[in-house]
Length: 363
Ligand SMILES: *[C@@H]1O[C@H](CO)[C@@H](O)[C@H](O)[C@H]1NC(C)=O
Ligand SMILES: *[C@@H]1O[C@H](CO)[C@@H](O)[C@H](O)[C@H]1NC(C)=O
Ligand SMILES: *[C@@H]1O[C@H](CO)[C@@H](O)[C@H](O)[C@H]1NC(C)=O
Figure 1: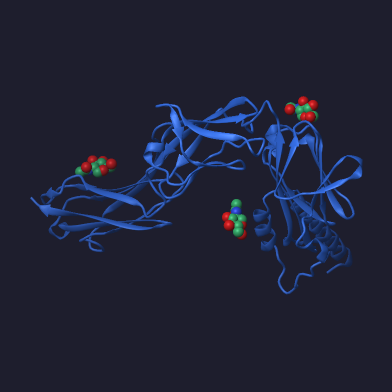
Figure 2 (figure 1 turned 135 degrees about the horizontal axis):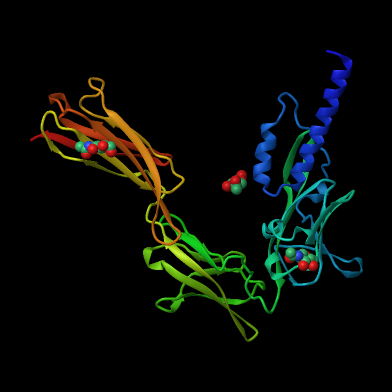
């Protein structure tokens, strides 16, 4: 290889390495980036773990910078008044951060992150009740292009931006939809801006209080969702004599649990004569994103041609809820003696498999 080409390739490679690490620092979802970066791992080069400093272990990496150069080590949560600028520091010469997704979507200019020699600095100007949420940071370990989050050196704290006019963390949507599924708990996400606020959950029609356990960092947990929970609910908060009502939440019950497909089979006729045409339809109702595979077993298999036609479509069922109808149709033309008997449809999704069958009898 020509020398100049080699030099150019080396330069390009070092640029790529830098680029990757920069990218990692900006990324929010640590899981995602980790997966991606591991995908780029070069075999045969054991990662040299740089910048180990045992002091970071055990203790928190996160501190809040107070006035006059004083620092506060942060624990699980922190309550600060909304409106007052916030400065956090995280120990490490290469640090990654996560913060409420809201800050990425709206007015990012209020948030700035600067890496200094020994720490990273997160500044949030004019924080509001909406910035309430989890803030975390971790040490990034890089070996060339390979960067990883150090699982031993990560700290997080939930920050409440207290605002007496906004007892609830504001949300952009006026009515949110919460899906209730029989196989998992549901959360009504009305979060508060001050930890010890008294909060209750209420149904609109018929009016009444709903009992559920409350966590200020996530909302109300409905452990066993049932069809009776369907309807519109809202949360009510009381603090220091003021009472406020949250946004509304539309609770929708999704009948189809995540499990093997729920399949039905139907023939256009079950008592048929030789020479008739028959269609046998296998139908599955399921979640919109769930693919279904169909396979058929039938008397004339491998002996006569049949047409098998598959399709799926989405249908709206109630407000904001969609169901996927997946169908496979087996079309028999000109029935013969060998075609009488049992027709079995096997429907399979990633959770399992269901078989349904029907018989075609001579008339
Ligand atoms: C992140 O990783 C944890 C464990 O490694 C896993 O349980 C979780 O589902 C992942 N989250 C996402 C969004 O991939
Ligand atoms: C963004 O934040 C700045 C500083 O807090 C504020 O002056 C400005 O009005 C905000 N812009 C929007 C679009 O919210
Ligand atoms: C079977 O389905 C095809 C396509 O939808 C249709 O044209 C035909 O009439 C159907 N035959 C019977 C017997 O229902």
